[in-house]
Image (cartoon, rainbow, N blue to C red; front, side, top):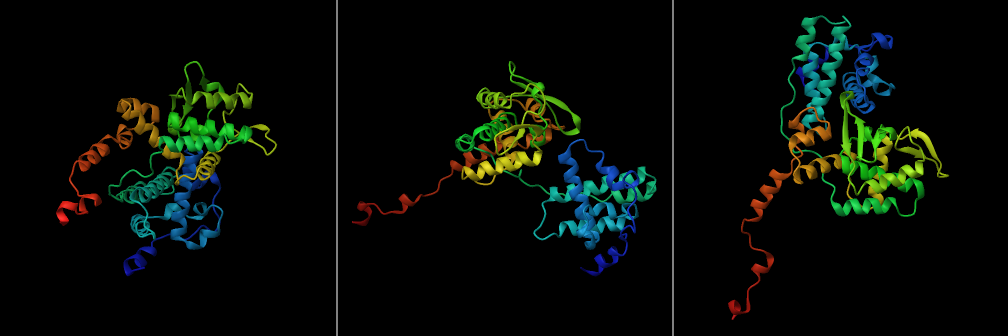
Length: 338
């Protein structure tokens, strides 16, 4: 730590002697804003990492962020936090750093709303700029042969669990919905005649997505096994193959995908890779950007546009037209050696 950081550390608050009640703690008040469990969990982890960064002794706490007096953080401390986030080893991506800064601004805003911080200190603290950089979209596409391998792995004689997992993967691939939206899907919100599923995404926004005809048999087979007309679409199954009434969590959806991916002997892939594959395939198939935005539930078409693979494919095609001698061209022909 250099002298500048040491000086800035002096401005960082100590921990609470005793954390205030949740209703008065800006950490918990900020997290209560999120409707989705995934978003709440993500931002909670960001605040906890920042708290540990400021006070390493908090690493042993169950919720490190609740023990930090966020209202005492001032502009110099925010500058220090931004710098420390950029110096992580291994380095964090700019978007990952900015996610943490977003969480920090959010909890400081709650400090102001709770009258724990005056407006001037809040405005100065939130004025620290985001990290600017451009990166390619993370993740990868899932190709057709990989989908076949995943579905084959699911249906390799595993009973209700395999049937359920095949349906989950088919829905992920054919709709591009997020894993927490899969976890929250309800049977009564699915219209088999229209192949339409109403789902609630980020910001508590409802939209309709459509199941691909090839994915319908996988889903229909699972719903017949589940044997219910209402409630969670995807449920836990015990070792005796009894289908419960309890829905799967978003984390369980991710674990199922990873388990099936390993069974199929495929490279690492996340549930979000199904989402980016769906959006890219939809645009490649002639769907326009506005339709893709609506189906994906993005608040901005700019976000959806990042999934458009056509510019990259055009660049690759242009590269393919360049001339480069292959190994066979380097072997002298008989006429040239005589």
